[in-house]
Length: 280
Image 1 (cartoon, rainbow, N blue to C red):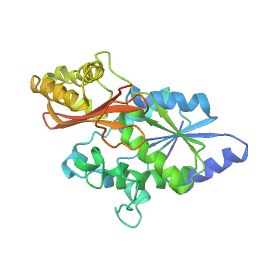
Image 2 (cartoon, rainbow, N blue to C red):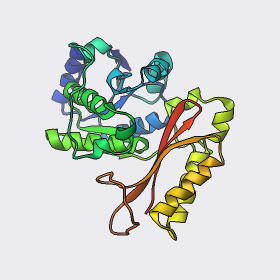
Image 3 (cartoon, rainbow, N blue to C red):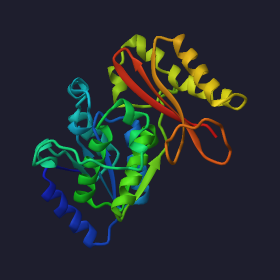
């Protein structure tokens, strides 16, 4: 496995392999890697000749400076995990490499999907996400890029970015990886106290119950059901939305004619966790 920190070196490596007809899979990450990330790597290795992983904690997508400061950075462990997974190249760029003219985001219009849910609660977040992903796509120019469905809204933003910019690559969604107790794998899980780690599986359990509840109840009743369920836990519900998978707009009725999904954000003490579930 090769570790590169310079974008020009990475481009040279890519050009050499592309000229010999090899396909390139790309997995962008913010490090603190876990089995969820490795599932993206495995999918990429199945579908491409070489796989490149970037590890970069992107400052422009954090609307909370404290969250950026506390975000786990585990470069050595990440490198070992990626080597074991058979990754060909890991790209560890500096902030200056990605933002040579200062840490600024481009403003995007994604047909309103950037204003729903996470967009409401984290102003500027998706401008930061789209900015950094576009920069990585320009450097790597992959055939396929892999994103987990845990950040489903982010996945939709990236799909829209590729469509708008007419980028010649395929975005491949990968299913959520969960711990044995159902908690969606996340780099933030390592920051949970022992007490909150025991509480956190309630998130997925309540989502599953909401899916069943919605079969015989209205959207509004289901939202109330979820709110009441969380009031009996030590977790604090920030939002629960039932939304159209394509537009991410909230729905008021359950309809078989469109795909809908339940989206949730919860605080476990000061640690914010998100999850989602297909509802039909």
